[in-house]
Length: 82
Image (spheres, rainbow, N blue to C red):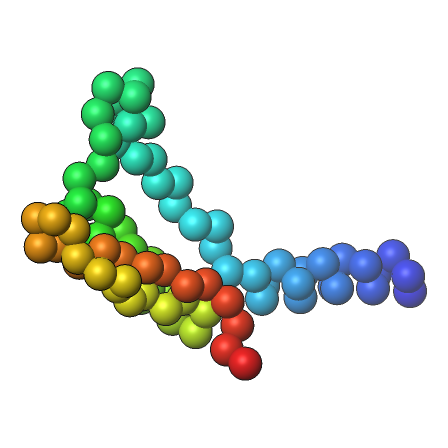
């Protein structure tokens, strides 16, 4: 009975697990650190992460001011709602 129970518990746990996230590489990592991520690429990444089910309840994307170029400075707060 014990031999049958362990595989069933493992199967139940694995079925409930979300798929692993895709690997994301920054512009720096892809260019051997010869380039940096652009503002637009960083903002697009943050917006895409906010759309995930987990992130939507645990991630709040807001701003805390503007750059000297007039672009919003992003502020990401991650945590459970209280």
